[in-house]
Image 1 (cartoon, rainbow over the protein chains, first blue to last red):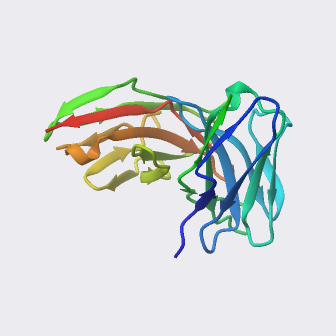
Image 2: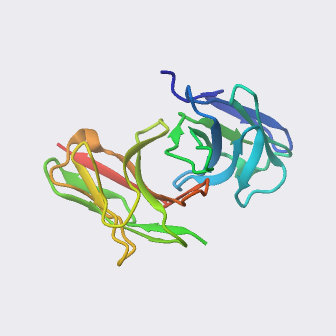
Length: 116
Length: 112
């Protein structure tokens, strides 16, 4: 069973640029959630994707956007990067039941984004 | 909205000492409660969970009991090891809700 994988591991960008982060969900999972973890803080929920549609969003501006593909992998896109976007970005996959209830989330190792 | 407050760190213990990391929460409805652990340079690993009041989650010698009356989910271990050194996060997740709400984390260092 393959776990959650993320790419790239590290990334350095400059302010104003755009970035795309990628996540492959664990085998059998159909839901992907993204979190931002600033240094020394707990992860903050960005959004979740289920059946290729956004299924809930945290307190993040529209320049944070995402996609989910038919194979349940996902991308996180951030436009107009700001210095405060520097963080570890974590992807988590889970299996949502037909009732809509989401079970345990399994996390990938994260992508460390540095904005200069 | 939902929130989690956990004990500020860092916590430094000697090997075989008793560990408690306090966690309290505010939530609507009946959330599930979790403890995650993050080792240096790695993502989050689920340590244990409890899905309803009075449930006790346990794993690798760690335990936590879901106390609805005190809205708490304190993490305990009777005898810590050097390998337990990590950051520990308390989190809650709503029923059909999709997101996890995390505390700020507690850094635990165990010295030999």
